[in-house]
Each structure stands twice: as C-alpha cells, then as structure tokens.
Length: 120
Length: 111
Image (tube, rainbow over all chains, first blue to last red; front, side):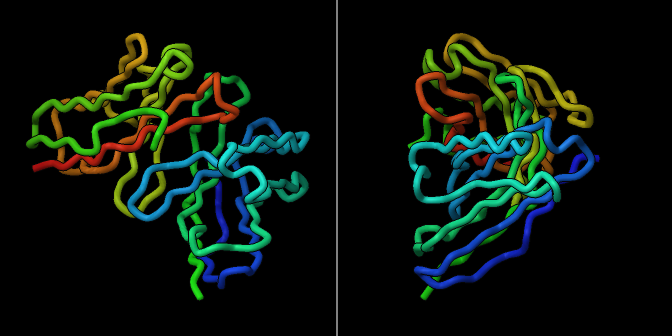
C-alpha cells in the first residue's frame, strides 16, 4: 500500500525557520515525483513545487520560487519542505503528494497534511 | 484567483444527479487531461477521476468525468450524504512553469 506520512503540526514565530517532512513507503521511491501543495484556511489547493527524488530535479511554481526550498533524501525515502524565515502568511496546511513520471499521470496519493501555524 | 474556474458551490438532494463544471483554456484543459479530487471535511484530498473519465479502483461508478474542448465536468449520480465534500479539478498548464494547476474548488452540499 502506497503511503505518504508527514511530520506533525508546527507552531512557530515569524522569522523562525522550519523544515517539514514526508516519508514515502509501499512503492519505488525514486520512480515518482513528490510535490508540495499549500491549502490556506478555507481556500483552494495551490501547487508549490515538485522534486524527483531519483536525481533531485526540482521545479518551483513561480509564486513560491525563492520562498521555500524543496529537497529529498532518497536513502531514507523522505522529501522536505523548508522555510528560512517564516511569515504569518505561511500559516496553512501543507500536503505532499505523489505524481507519476508521465505528464498525464495524476497526483494519485497524498500525505495526511502538516498544519503550520505562524504567530507572534 | 485559480487558473481553472469552478462554481464555488453546488447542492442536491439524496438520489439526485449533480454536475460540477471546470473551465480552463487551450493551454491547460484544452491540451491536457483532467483529474478530479474529493476532499472530505478535515481530510486530505483523494483522487476521484483521472485522465478525464477514469476511476481509480474503489471509487463508485456513481462518479463520472468528461471533457470537451477547454471545459470538464464531474457528475455524481445517486447523490448520498457522504458525498458532501469539496471537489477540485486539476490539470497542468503548458504556458506556466507549474506542474499542476487546480480549480478553486466546489463545495457540494447534500440537502
């Protein structure tokens, strides 16, 4: 069974750094892309970026370029989303999601989500 | 403002048939396949329809999808109370440096 398990909820102050994780299991980790999706309270889904753990090829959606860093450690089947200096507007639910290598492949599995709260 | 346009809300009574539309452009829906996701309250999204009209195993055949030109639709027949959720369409856009674009979501209420 394919599973993406994310790290737990975080409460941070503005200006602090943060790294959240997503561990994949039940499939060949290096054969699929992993993307990150933001969902602000009561809002739609926003695609942040994607990484191919096999070779760490990473692409960012323009609004998130330079705002976050996506990385992966294939030795422990884990991808990461990190911020160097959080803002209150980063408060949201963040999901990791798996996507196949063919462009028409859908996102077919999602993590359970990591709630990030940034407040002074 | 989402790249794909969905109605913010839809509703129906148990047993009814409901459709949710998703409108895009030639650079996204017009040239790529469409996927649909169901997000039950407080949970992660779940793949409901992929490649316009394919159902993953375990998804009831009450759910169906279609695409024509730059628009797509999700239909739910025999509406049930457990179908009350947010529904999102998604595809990718050839003109943006983005792998996936989502619709704004439609909140389905079962009356």
